Length: 121
Image 1 (cartoon, helix red, strand yellow):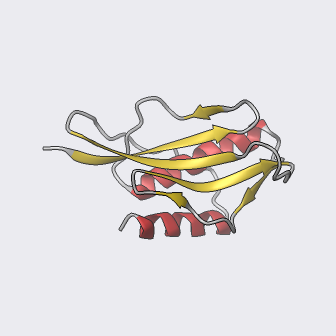
Image 2 (cartoon, rainbow, N blue to C red):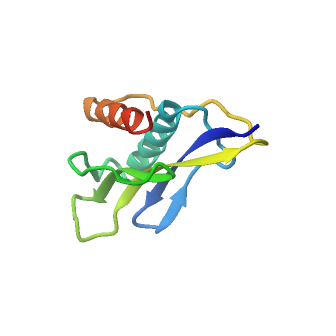
């Protein structure tokens, strides 16, 4: 019997590489968003909160892979974007782990959480 797992990823627009905890498969979309927001918090800390996150832009993608949030260093939309992404994987041999939780969640982050949960329902 196979199960549907979620995985959170983040893209670093400056270093042009992806971030994720290796082998993190999560049970729910809510856990995946929590993990993604934890990765966002790490990037914000690394770049001294100079990433301007675009909460107005709509989510893009399919249920297999959706970009839930984009951000730009110093708000420069001509630069390579930072992003948060949720992907799904159907597997029988993976084990779900507990998500990394952000220390604080803003009002805008709560809206993203709500949108992603309704997207996957």
